[in-house]
Picture 1 (tube, helix red, strand yellow):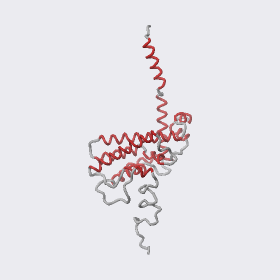
Picture 2 (cartoon, rainbow, N blue to C red; picture 1 turned 180 degrees about the horizontal axis):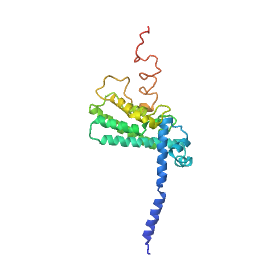
Picture 3 (tube, one colour; picture 1 turned 135 degrees about the horizontal axis):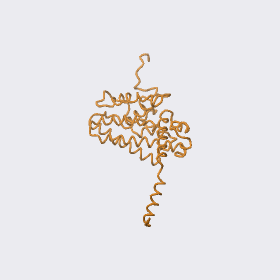
Picture 4 (cartoon, one colour; picture 1 turned 90 degrees about the horizontal axis):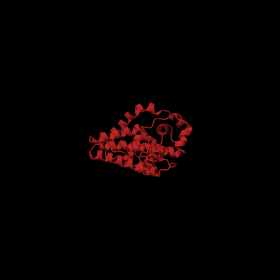
Length: 252
């Protein structure tokens, strides 16, 4: 059999390319680890032990450490994964030609199903919020969510006094199971309660909301005036002089 010099080069290059490609089982294991970590971060926070993640993923501890040498690498992968899938849902919503608020609703329910509350570690000061992968994923999802909301407002279907931060924090809070409750057992309530929240965002609004609409920047800056629980935020729980609290008829 005669093999040309060109053929030898091509065969060698092909074999080298094949050898550098991750095996299918290795990719499946990595995805199982990310999925397990995402669920456990939602249930227990980002400090969950690696061996617990490995146990839920059905892999050994060595497999987890081989893919993610430290906790920050795993958290970053989970956050980027959730944001990428959330961005895909937002792009799909923007591609729809139907009713604008309906597209926003479908995006919100898809984001909840993707465990968007796993993004909470990104808001922690101990987490590297400025990693290039995170910055790119964050900008993408924020831009898409703002476009979905702007379209619904332009159609007169979304109230004017809400912002992307309001929507994202609402989805995150409602998709996080109560303490001591697993993800799967809480799922049956998530979409019911999320729809109640979304119905409150419809226009026309029955009344004004306290404070200003929340931006994503407010969520990343704990002491921003509009950030939830900021010292000067309306209805902040530690504000003894909150003018929005109902008056006590027994006060002098």
